[in-house]
Length: 181
Ligand SMILES: Cc1cc2nc3c(=O)[nH]c(=O)nc-3n(C[C@H](O)[C@H](O)[C@H](O)COP(=O)(O)O)c2cc1C
Image (cartoon, rainbow, N blue to C red; front, side, top):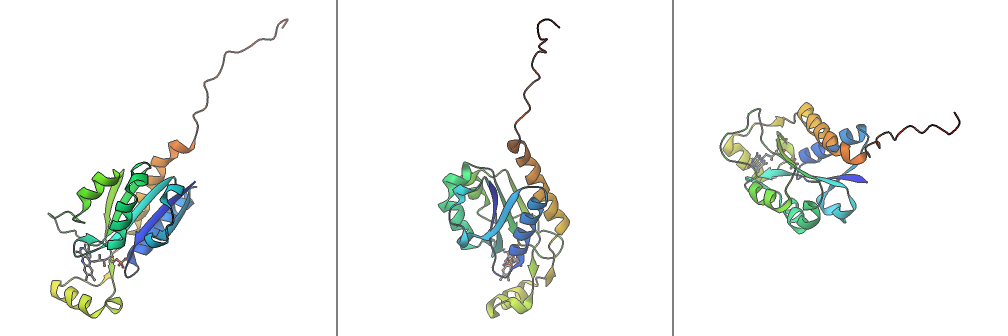
């Protein structure tokens, strides 16, 4: 069965992270596909789910939150990992946890892991109001996605899924000597 890497992305940075995770899982021998949350028909058809969203104003994008809450029963019945793409620059601001709904998400689907990744910001792609906000908070432009960290996280997911894919070999039975030998 396939691993779903579902994402919500406004300007493409989170989509890139989700696609990279799916590629890494494939390279490690798993079937995996990255899809925007709105294109997922039924999460029950997947063996495991990785779900991520860009963070805007401290929260996940609406469609990602809706997806998680709408599908919380099937999600909590299978291995789930969550991730966010947000902070710009190279240091996360201490203190406040992001997204602010994280505790609610943990209660709803009991993820095996949560990871906050650095994001990317391209002024050219922003709407006028977004550009005003970014200027006001002096957020730095650039692509801060940490590909080695993203790959390492995908590898951890693959290794946690591995034992389910293999049946343990049965213990060797007693040696039977045919009569008359
Ligand atoms: C208007 C605006 C608000 C943002 N608010 C936050 C925020 O509250 N916390 C955060 O970590 N990043 C914030 N970011 C940065 C984005 O989360 C980051 O650029 C992300 O990688 C964008 O993902 P996307 O391209 O998939 O939409 C904000 C960016 C914009 C343009």
